[in-house]
Length: 388
Image (tube, rainbow, N blue to C red):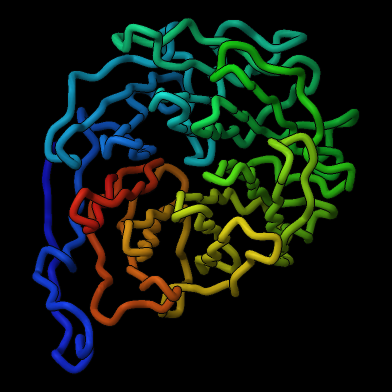
């Protein structure tokens, strides 16, 4: 870790009336630098409260993914393990194409990433692969990387991975169905029911032809109740770049459109989206009109809450991440001032368990490197940590 900065604030006694007294630590948001100068961290906590993290290092066009674990809430980490079995087989350029992490059955980490131009094995026709690996049974290294694309090549905006405690693992990406334009792109899903040992062939998430923004990232998540969620940006026409939130109640076999967030713009947005476990459901976050949108899903059939945004004008908010604690509070963090090969800063806002922004519980930190995006997690004391 390179640096750590703590921002602690207090609310007045009037705001705390009728609630237990809270200390400064209850309001702390701590920022942590990625180990070894890495970028694009992904963080999840497991059933034992341990913190699992992956990050990217090296040439953004062809680098490596590393894994670390913390048993003390992020104060220290084990020695890093390289995830990709072939050196320099991952890509980070554009920020949307970085590696993704999920922690599943037995607290095993699963990692998926878009292959670089040197990555092996290739997809069909020597195309860029969607690669996957998981921690081995001994827990001292990662298995040999595998490509999960069987038929639908054309990977551009990266992909994502989700896992649950029942041994289901899901990988998702978008690629063309038959043609080459964005309107023909679909979201494809592969599923494993044996904790990542084997995967089915890919199937389309939706029969509906929505297209997919070619250079936009996407995300997939699994809840404790068995639902699977997907966020991606559509591309029906050049100017229609709507966010689609999908939900599945049958372990990713079929999906329905749960919500959409329209955006009309004639360029590729190069956006990403975030999920975090929150009780039996998830919290989802994405970018629209340079503002961050947030939605909490409780896993029930009608479990769609209103879409909210962090206070403020927005303007250049990108690459959101979310994390929730045991009290039902959640934090949203995002990048500001970034661009092509240009770093910026990280900003954040904490929300209470009713989805209301908490007074004073926001902040900003400079020094976000180029191609980087923040990640967040809740510590064992329910305070929040932001990693970048």
